[in-house]
Structure formats: C-alpha cells, structure tokens
Length: 158
Image 1: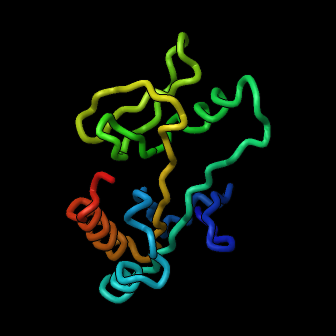
Image 2: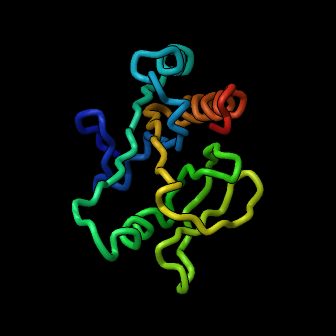
C-alpha cells in the first residue's frame, strides 16, 4: 500500500490488501509544473482518478569519501532511472547490479533497445512517480493515457 505524506509517497508495511493505486515512473521533464497543471486536471476529470506526484528523493549522503559512489550505486539497483546517453539526453533504463570489477558504476539496461551500459552515478538520476488512485478499470485507462502522453510528448528523450 502507499501512504501520501506531505506530498511524498512512502510504502506502508502490512496492508497488502490495499490495491487501489498504480505507480507510473515518469521522466522529470514530463512532470514539471504537474501540480495544478493540465495533465493532473485531465486525469481527475476524464478518468475519475486521483493522481499524485511522488517526487524522486535523491537520498543525499552527508558522508563524503571512499564508498560514497558504491552506496549510491547500490541504492539505484532495481530502480527505474533516467541516465545520460552518448547524445547528452536522458533516457529511461533500469539499474542493474554492477560488475565486481567496477562496483562504483551502475549497469543500466536501456528501455529503448535493451543494451547495457556501465555508468558513473553522476550521469544517472532517479525518476519521479505518479501515483494514481481509483477503481482498477479507471486506473488502467488513466495509466494508458499517461503513458501515451509521455511517448508522444515533444521531449520524450530529454
């Protein structure tokens, strides 16, 4: 289950029967100006759901020194991320366990072609999520609309 706490999303342990939410990873450029914006209103009005932006928490370390990059890489394993590709734009991928010989570099499997690249954490950022609350059939329609808008948007690779 997901709890909304001061405009942030947090996982709640225990209540596994609360299945009234869908989480959609969203690129940061797509959710700029989200609160009170057109997309938030459209999802509410057209689909009868409650969309909530869950800002990406970077989890800044106060510790500086050996091991900092390794900790950051470990936190991103298994998460949907945006990483800078060779053309300078950010694309969506999934963080994978680093190879033993490069523990300070995250392996990213790219969503656009399935290839894998080892990257320094400074070129990777976590994604925001939109939590969509409502009845299952309404949520599915809203999620599909949101994904379609992300695909067709002018900044699909920013």
